[in-house]
Image (cartoon, rainbow, N blue to C red):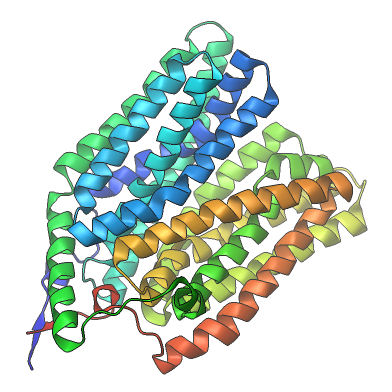
Length: 439
C-alpha cells in the first residue's frame, strides 16, 4: 500500500488565518459575560446574589451538553454548521439576557449562552487538531488560536470595566452593553460563515478518508462507558479534571483569595492578572514548539509541577510573611504572575492529549473535554468555597497542590506508559502525527 501525503501542510504552514479571530471574540466575550456583566446585571435586577450565582452556574453547566454537539459534528461532518448554529444560540441568549427582567428569562438566556459557547470553542479546536497537520504545524496553529483567545480575554477585561463605568455614570444602559456583546459575537458569526469554509472542508475530507480506511482495515467496534473510563482517553480526561479542580482552588476566586490571604487590593489584583495574561502570550510560542516536538505529556507534567511549586510558594509567603504588608503583597503577586505564565502548558496540552487518546472523532473528544472542564470548575469552586469558609484562604493553595500531585501520578504512571507502548491508539481519524492516508 502506498502513502498519499495530505495537502494540509502545503496549504497552511501554521501562518495566520482569518478564522483564528473567532477565538479572539470568544475570549473577548467570556470574561465580560461570565464574570462581570451578567453577575452585575442579574444582581441589580433581582437584588439576589443567589440568583446571580445560579445564572452563572447554569451557564457553566451548559457546557456539559458539548459532547452531544461534538458527536453530531463527527457523525455528519457538520462542524461548520454546528459552530454557526452555536453562535446564533449565543447571540440570542445575550440579547434575551440584556432585555430580561425576571428569573425565567434569565434562566432561558443562561441555558442558551452556556450550551452555545462550548461548541464554538470545540469546533475551533477541531479545526486545529483534525486538519491533518504535522505535529510542528499543529502546534503553531494551536499557538495562534491560544494567542487570539488570550488577547480577547485581556482586552475584554479592560473594555467591560470601562463600559460598566460609563453605565454607572448613566451614559449607557445595561441593554446597550449586552447589545455590544452580541455585536462582538455577530462578528464571530460572520467569520464562521465566510472564513471557515476551506478549513471545515479539509477537516471533513480528511475525516472521511481516515474513517473509510479504518473501516477497510477493521470494522469499528462499540465500547462501553466502563471501557472508555479504563482507556487511555478516560485516564486523560481524569488528568484534565484533576488539573482543573486544583487550579480553580486559587484561580476561581483569585481576587478574593489574594485579598483575603495577603491583603491585595482587588483592583490591583485584577490589573496584575491582566498584565500576567498578556505576558503569557510570549510563552505560547515556546509551548507550541515543545508540544510539536515532545507531545502533550511532558508539557502537561511541567504545568502540574509548576502549579504545585507555585502553590507552595504562596503558602510560604503567607506563613513566613503574613502581616508583613507590602513585602507579602509584592511576593504574592509575583508568584501569581509566575503561575499565570505557565498556564499555557496546560491550556495547550489539554486538547492535544484529548486528541491523541480519543476513542472516537475529533469533535466528540474535544466536546467531552469541555464537559470535563465544566464539571471540574463546578467541583473546584464548591470545594474552594468550603475550604475558605471553614479553614481560611490559605487552605486554597493546598487544593492546587493535592490535585496537581494526583494529576501527576495519573499521567506519569497511567497515561505516559500506554502512549509510549502504543496501547489504546486513537481512532485513525485522530492521529494528528499521521501525515499520510493509505489508499
